[in-house]
Length: 496
Image (cartoon, rainbow, N blue to C red; front, side):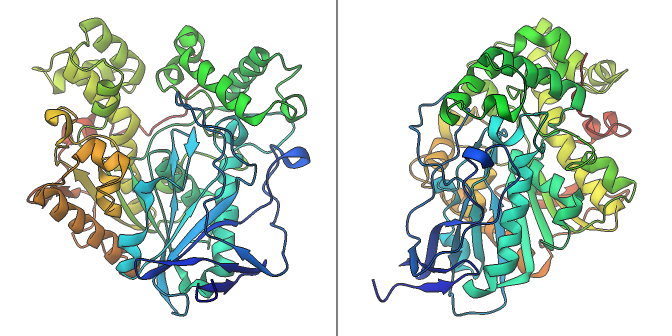
């Protein structure tokens, strides 16, 4: 092992391994394990160590609240991984990727986030684990809220202290994520403790997924009551096994529809415990904070897929089954009030129930939050590059369309990962390979120079890169939806 790469961090020496022409370091702690007395607390600085720490295995996965069977692992959840073209280099651009999904999972070990293609292009890639679910976002009375965001800030602070030793430039850090990871990026844009920790941001499929304190308090109290806890506090939950807690949250999420009358729009998300606009850790949602100049704009690459909701409708078995009653309920819950439902029916007069359901869900959950983040960032003095992925996923005969998450294996060049093959197929077509290369090149150009390679989004123009077999830069294609939402920022979920 003497020929393997070594790097001295502020906490101690780590030894990684060489792989495909670059160096990889895995499972490096950026904070102490959040267990015992530290459970549900803000992240504590990592311990120092003597000698050389082996950094060749991914750190344990944080307990996941997903309907899949993941065996419990260790408790050293707050770790990160670094892929670098050369630890001996200097001044390389850095991408810090936040692999959070639904605020329920965060697995930096997912092969979809393999950094090989990006490091080959000269980028230092950092992927992090952070707390999600109840560990990260339960609104408990006696500990800080939004602990998952605090973990992300701690990881970015680690990057500032240490990334130069891996060949990266701490002044050239881009933070990125998809879905709830993109929601995390949007939050970091407006959080004071995150200022100065990154220069640029990439956000794919930004969700409008936040709760008011009133709703979060009631939801957490109901969850604590389900567990038999005396109160919705860290003290009452601390002795419950973390993986049992995550499993209970999975069951709790599956039964949200029973609370529709009280909890409204939240019950349609499948995510009971999401970020809380608490006034301190997260003072407000990103859109008004940026639009009203309470946060500064930055260089932002942001976008969504054309058919965001299709993946969820297909995988849930609902695709092709939506009724007029389903469309009415979707418009009632998710169209902007008071006239959004009527506006959708007017804007899409030929749309049947299936199209109306898919359109309003895609808009409310991802498309409009992403598009409006581009507008808000530009209003705050930043530069926004907007995209929409239009290319149809070949798998399942094409019924997935340009679905949620399709852009991620394309950008990472991980077409052979499990998610990549699920969406794109076992043998990627030449069109898939070419589009993957195009999106990778846009990422690399952006993290290096701040320019994505197409015209920036400007008021009145709304120029957007339409990523397809033949990509083009045109006015924003979802103009009808944009006009419906023009005077409405994504609002936090609240009690009905």
